[in-house]
Image 1 (cartoon, one colour):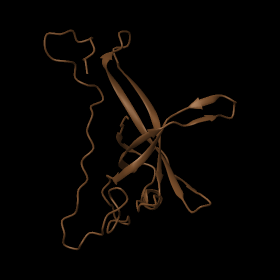
Image 2: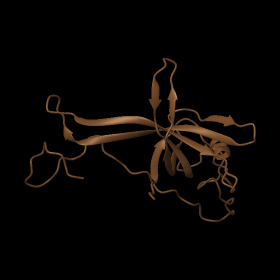
Image 3: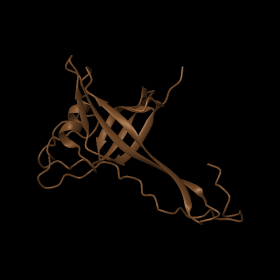
Length: 170
């Protein structure tokens, strides 16, 4: 039996799409960017190479109490920064042109908002982790979300006696 978990920090690339089911269930669909910068320069251009794509994330209201779709619908918008933890599930469909498409979708188990509240936005009682948290007590120290990692646009070349154009083995 295998185990897999995926964690992403990113900003929503668009407004959440909310779908409600006939049985009362709800899912919020969001997109998060994933950007990989390779550790090797392109020989012709001298630029660092990289790949980018958007991963689709489904946030469900769960019978066990986590109401992630409601949290997304109420508090998140395009550009909101979030930490999402979950698992991948296969998703296959046929597009408008009749082409079979296979793209995995992340199913969120944990959702944590990373933006600081601003004037006019919800701050007291806004759920921050897993869609479930108690309102803050007045006078209590505010909880702080972990800072998003900072990545330079161009990674530093490897140090030491090796060749700078070789990939770092990690």
